[in-house]
Length: 246
Image (cartoon, rainbow, N blue to C red):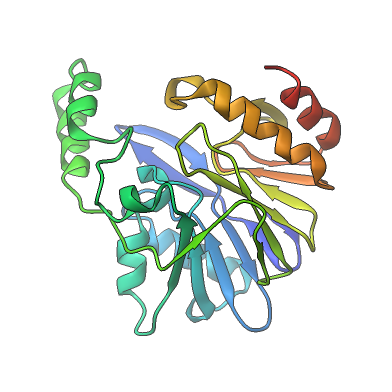
């Protein structure tokens, strides 16, 4: 969904253990380059390329990938995407999640021991599909680490908002030119309503809600939730309510 010229929420389908859902990586661009925020699950490279074309942005303009955090549904297609380009693609993430993305530490939520317990009751075919996904190497090098409040002079200007809780190094992004908040998984949404962090996959829920207070200091008109899509109604009031809820 196009927000305005230079920013679009890409609507991709993610299939995990037979459960199909929509995810929304964000595409930012100007006359010089394109930037992708998060990359979906493994195997989504063709869909990402197609989404670029539909947005009218040449795929070869991609120069940077910003990762909001370490989870496999956000970094899964990064290795195949990086292999697609002859030149370097700069990968940016927060330093707290860097060792997980690079494979120096096991993923907090997607580690094999934990997931084996969660999939015991699944049908055999779904369990085998998920086990094959666990065997994939989806780690990638992080070229540049970012920090809270850092201004990135790309694609209309971006401010990094450090929002730990969902993971230790989770970040959200504020796009100045469009007054858009890119939440990653700090917030999920349903039919335009902001619901806050998703408790089952947020290890430190109190910290995650505390992080939401940072959003109220920005002039936000549009929110892109990775899970839930674009929200535009009563954004200020919705964010203030979430910030006060814990």
